[in-house]
Length: 283
Ligand SMILES: Cc1cc2nc3c(=O)[nH]c(=O)nc-3n(C[C@H](O)[C@H](O)[C@H](O)COP(=O)(O)OP(=O)(O)OC[C@H]3O[C@@H](n4cnc5c(N)ncnc54)[C@H](O)[C@@H]3O)c2cc1C
Ligand code: FES
Image 1 (spheres, rainbow, N blue to C red):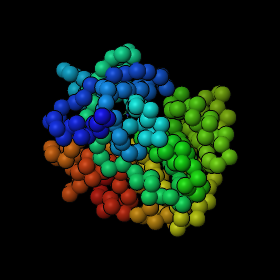
Image 2 (cartoon, rainbow, N blue to C red; image 1 turned 120 degrees about the horizontal axis):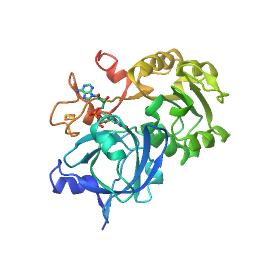
Image 3 (cartoon, rainbow, N blue to C red; image 1 turned 135 degrees about the vertical axis):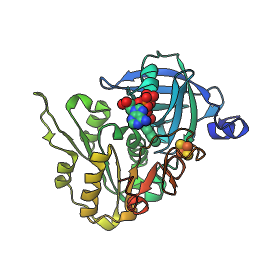
Image 4 (cartoon, rainbow, N blue to C red; image 1 turned 60 degrees about the vertical axis):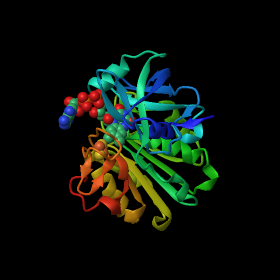
């Protein structure tokens, strides 16, 4: 029998991680690696795009990490794109294939991609924000006929920081994807657009009533991206944003991620602009 990880957690403590085994490590940039992880026999992650897991190492710590693979490509494993930032992520970066780490989740609401059938979808990830949005992008591309236009605007600081380069090439070569990429600081080999992600909005026109827009990235980036999306006339309830807040429990118990009445871990991390526009701390 195949048990979903969340069902297993209901029978055990919600704080008890399951051991995930790293089956593959793919270096993406100097700071980011993609970890392919398998759970023990009979347990599947069963996630939605936009959800996250709590990753832990005994004696080191625990941190929320978005699930970067789409459910449509799960094959019994899932992928996490992890930036080396502090204690936990640096220790995870030192692991080799075959190494184990703790996994709790999947947590959070995720993006309701299946509700967007027939809609045009505009993805605008910045930097590491592509890690969570990749799950939604590939879910849409694997069910391509269910959706209208697919637009992807991706910005990174420099060419070396672009994530998932092979997939970027694939998306740029597809006739059913409108793909635009930019970097703030080019190197001498860079032939593409230079400038912040908002400069890419000049390349697209949308039919606003039928468009869903989804963004994720650092606050300094998404504040300006939200202005562009609103400027295109996209409805506040159709603009989705994935928020990153410091978390502990991941399950709405500790209040660590609370902004006013919202628990980012449970009510989010994905919100519409309409839901959070009055929350100064979020924007
Ligand atoms: C929902 C969600 C999804 C995420 N998804 C991803 C993902 O897909 N990939 C990924 O790489 N990261 C992701 N993150 C970010 C990741 O959880 C953090 O970077 C996490 O802090 C890393 O843990 P650490 O122990 O390695 O680093 P930490 O020790 O937590 O340090 C990380 C950085 O924060 C600084 N810092 C430490 N403590 C504080 C503090 N109290 N206040 C302010 N700054 C502090 C450190 O100096 C360092 O620069 C996500 C976060 C959230 C909330
Ligand atoms: S992390 Fe504990 S309530 Fe959200």
